[in-house]
Each structure stands twice: as C-alpha cells, then as structure tokens.
Length: 274
Image (tube, rainbow, N blue to C red; front, top):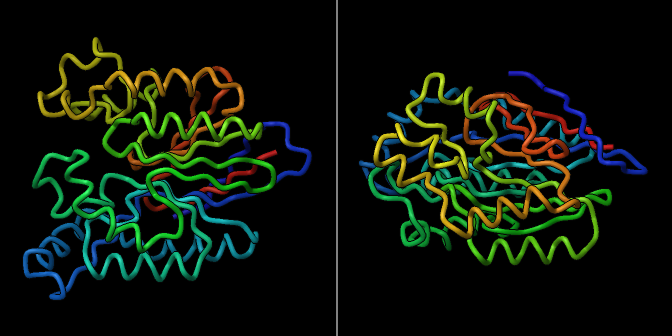
C-alpha cells in the first residue's frame, strides 16, 4: 500500500490536490441478508486484500490535504446491508465524490447478465449510501469541473452524453471520473498480456475477435458509447480521465492531450492538478 503522486497540468492559476482511490471491493455480509450472501462474502474476501487500510489511508490523506476523495467505483463488491452500512458511514465521515462501478449493483457476483434492468433492481437502495448521484453528477473544486459517469457495463447512454455536453457549457476544465477506462493501444496490450479480453470501453471490434463470446457481447460498444467516446476525445475542455476497474496503477494517454490514469485496489493516488 502506497501513496502515488501524479501531476496533471491543465493551466490552473492555483494548484489543487485531490485523493483518488478505486476498487476497494468491500465484502461484508451477515444474516440480515441471507446465508447465501454470507457465504459469498467469505468467498470474495479471499479474492481481495483487506480494503480497510486503504480506506483509512485515503481518509487520513484527504483530511490532511483538506480535499475530497474521488472514488471511481466498486467501493462495495456486492449489495448487502453490511456493505451499504459501511459505505454510508464512510461517505458520511469523509468527503467522497463517487462514480459507480459494476459491483455497486452486483447482487451475487456473476449470477446474471449485467444490464440496465439488472442495475435497476438495486439502484435506489445503493444510491442511499452515497451523497452524489453515482450514475452521473458533477462537482467543481478549485475551478475544475469533476464529472462522474457510470460506465460500469462498458457503455455510456444518451442521457449521460447530454449531461456531459451541458457540463461543458460551464466553460471550466473537466476531469472525467469513470469506472472503466477507455481503450488506448498501450493499455490494451497490457490488459491482453494475461487476460482473454481487455476489459476496456470502446475497443475496436477487430481487436475483439478472439474474445470469449460472452465478453465480446459484454464489452462491445454501441453507437451512443462510440459517440460519447468521440466527444470525449474532441472536447477541448476535457483535460483528463481518472478511472479504475483494472486493478493496476497506470498512467497513459487517451489522446495526445488527455491523460488517462488508473489506480490499483490497494494504493491511493494524490492528483496534483495545476
């Protein structure tokens, strides 16, 4: 567990710092749910490192800096009373700005196709644990507009694109927060080195031909997602993307002018924006 410092140069008159963390994957459950959920929690706890030290480090660092915590999803591993209680307590005690990941809405992890109908089974309940709209929201800090979009299912929707365009009308530099990173070739190659697919948004279909069938369907971009990615790449006010999902520390570029940054499950990152 470490603190990574990452500069982002966008031309601010007064520099700001923010704390980024992601993919903490809380796996808490008790019999207020059911035995199946308790068993799931035990099983999933073996997959991830204990998230509490990273959560405590993020809290301590953010309070020392007097800055918000930016969390790009999968704070919880699955929906449970205990997970949502912890999430609510954490966001009550800390200034957290959140973009949802796919696991925010996961009922039993991998038991069903993840789509809008599946997400909506738990959206209202999950949303109560967080202060901002975890599907799409914005917050201005130090003259920078942080815009959070839920792309946990590898898709953007028309409402999110319209929201992003409205946010651009504010005329402020934008840092995008999202769970899944957008395809870029260096990151694609890193992800494919040991995986059957890249787990990225808007991968060109010719690079997906050897994906397992279910992953191809899961990660294939639709027209509105492609339109949104093109808008992100060409909107001059969008200055950086901060994401998660891939469980590794990465700093690359979506375009020549838009850095894309991810943070691992166990580290936190201080974004030094000037």
